[in-house]
Image (cartoon, rainbow, N blue to C red):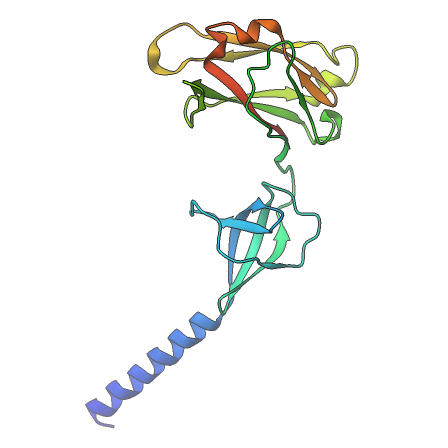
Length: 199
């Protein structure tokens, strides 16, 4: 076999191998970005993948971790991560949580694996900011007995300004979060509640 024939054969094998690799399924982890329409974000990407995937998994929720099979330009959700799943139980209009404000949850705190996380974000000049995010965990034990509906202090740091931390004060009931009048008074207006997660 001549050198030219060997190079031609090697090139043919590389092209064949490339075609087989491209045709093979690829398994990737992703997060459900929306339920209607069903979309997902592959790990490492900032935006959802275009198009609606097919799925073999029922009952998907926003934020679910899923395994996606990619093959021949098609995406199929083939599995969901086991264990504790973060679920968005509330994500309405961002609120200070003053006395008249209530975040009504889509599921009870007691139905979560371990409890809930209150998500507070900086609020500047009437706009929610994607910095100074504070996560406050409340165990489901809180609503299991005598503490149901009792107050919870959420310590917030107002960023790199050097000012002292302050607290939001909310009442956690099994089905909702209730506000307190002090949350609408500066400096407690530096943050708003933007979501409640079930964990």
